[in-house]
Length: 114
Length: 113
Image (cartoon, rainbow over all chains, first blue to last red; front, side, top):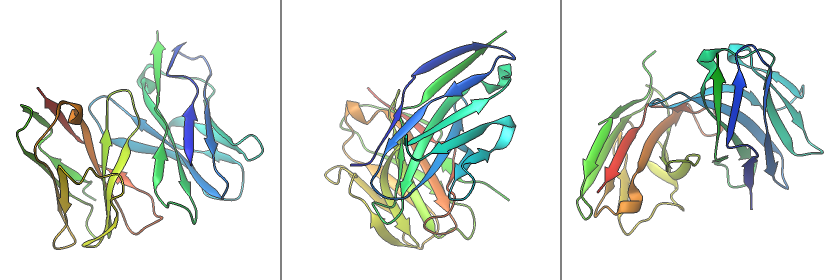
């Protein structure tokens, strides 16, 4: 069965520090991969997505992620975080030709401290 | 372009009562999704519509949950009767078509006491 594992439930960092939020998935077929951000009391907003092509994907707000097929990972990174990046981040996978629905991880709460 | 609209934003009910949520997708979007997000978890797909037809409702608890999208535009999700474990945020999303990017509404936070 398809699944998404976000290895850290909470990540505290200081402002201007780099951050990496980890995501691993399980799948036997080709996938599309996504990172969403959810601010308090709001819906999900797409940060970036990998469909095909270059394995390094750049998104909004200075975030980027790298697709690693051999390690079945899609980790999210930002070289320097701001207080405003404090939010919940969700990794999601869409299986092509499979169940054809988005499966989300449990989320990582990023807290940026001054 | 207007986003996905949902109402109400918050709802508190007692167990065994019924409740309904409404969603208006982005204009022209053929695919509509309802997700349940329990505290501390990622969203879980409950039902997916393509126009006014159901594509996937495999994770919808059909003994108490129902959803419709009669005219292929807005949609209603109903719970009857509600249980304590139904406390969650219910998110609606829409996409231009299947496989396209999903846009999420702000959600309805349901508390069942």
